[in-house]
Image 1 (tube, rainbow, N blue to C red):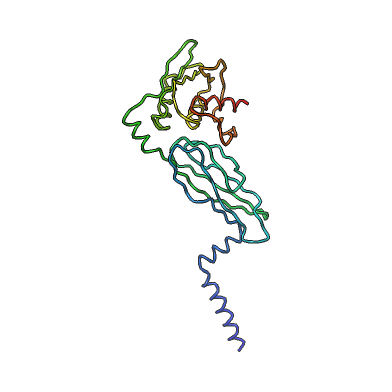
Image 2: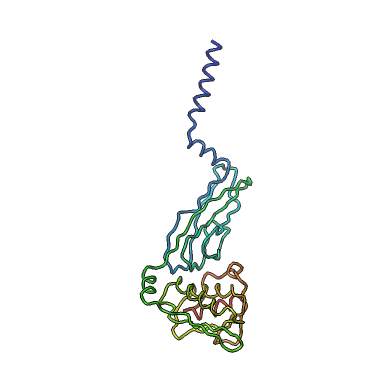
Length: 255
């Protein structure tokens, strides 16, 4: 009888072990660290003012609670400004370049246990804008050297092409003005554009390492390369076109 009881115990244990499926192991994994979900992937079409990042996190064990949350941009063609990055719902502002952006949500609970999850945002150019730019081949960035080795940039018809085309033409102009001691920005009447255009212009110009001057102002501004990463921009900026947005941004950045 004793041997039969022993055999029964052994068979019971073996049954429990064999009965452990992958789902059971996943459930066990939930007990060792918080559960975190960065949210569904997104696909957006330019122009885009902001990207909403909305995740969830919880601890399966009631003795622990989520203590810290943190969003960060893992990769992408452009570094974006993150607002409320220390909460489950954050906002990434002013994407201007098409491509895939990857964001990561990391959490830690009161037991010191951590976990993370990633999501991606694919930003595409508006098909109509791309087609219009291809058909018309509009030159929206003109350039020339002025006195004292000043590089002059003249912008016009910014709404007639995609942001990608603006970036391409600006890069060509800056290459041609590679020995300029400073840049003067000039905007034609009704040049158009918006806050995204202004951010693209200032981001590209800041990489040149020379002062930026506005034609309607006697003052010049020096921007460090990558200043957008170091500046917490407001959720909204009161401006109507690229020219007024550039002015408003420079005033805000320099306080």
